[in-house]
Image 1 (cartoon, helix red, strand yellow):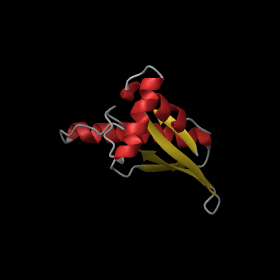
Image 2 (cartoon, rainbow, N blue to C red):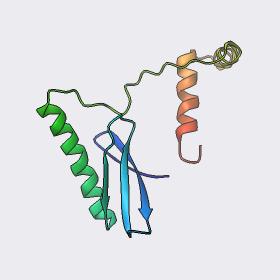
Image 3 (cartoon, rainbow, N blue to C red):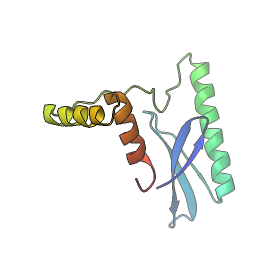
Image 4 (tube, rainbow, N blue to C red):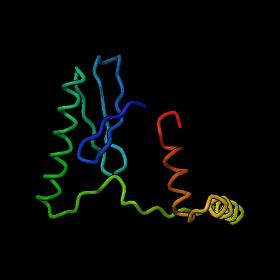
Length: 112
């Protein structure tokens, strides 16, 4: 997956061969914000404009803009998975939160 980032927002980028354009969509927020451009430079400019417009629109309407992630993650997993994760974390000399953060960071890396 190809992505680009601006002001903490990440967008997925794809090439649309039918229309001969690059298209993007901002990820991690409920609003559907998409943009397009005929060149990578134009696509980046449109992405930045889309983020700026979203932030300005939120400000105009007195709404807090959604952030792609708050840093808080609540997971529901089977008790046996929770137990094995806790043992793995303790075996590594880490808290479950530290261990899970490292595992998620590794898994979320491109090619992870």
